[in-house]
Length: 255
Image (cartoon, rainbow, N blue to C red):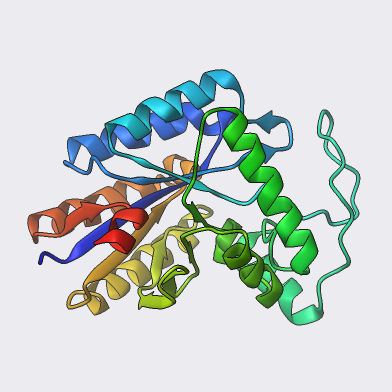
């Protein structure tokens, strides 16, 4: 059995559609035709619409997997919404430790990091309803920045999703089985951060060489801010030459 490669494209919504299309074309060029596309159902000001949903259904028909990616993809911090954005439901402030994690790893996007069980379940069901209304069914759920409170992770299982992913693992909720695999991702920003991130990613790829599953995440912002996408594509080209088989998260769970 060939070692697997899951490439996930995060933050898919109408706002990022053009960047996502560029990235998907580059992945096609490398022969990576099965990807997990993480769809934000209701990003404020960029809610999923019928036109974007048609495009996503077309991609799914070609072999991509559509994954539910949070609901709003940002926390309600108590600050006024940006112009044109609706206010989000109020949330209690994060404990100091979780607030630091949100700041360092998610830049304020750790939507499911501070939710209790009922809040998380409400957002999971809301996102699923919005997707279903547009003809999209997602078997899996990935929280923004792969961050969950313990209660939110329990809610994902209770909501009936097949799997969830964290920074460190892919959890098959139906089988109760974890596949340990670090989520490798660039962090767009200043050149210094970009170069550090590239070095770290090279180390993680080398460490994962014997692993049966390798996960690489791409964000639309990777096209900009130093263009870390170019480095990710070079990594992926090497992995494909090394015999990795491109799969979706759902493919892996059903394999």
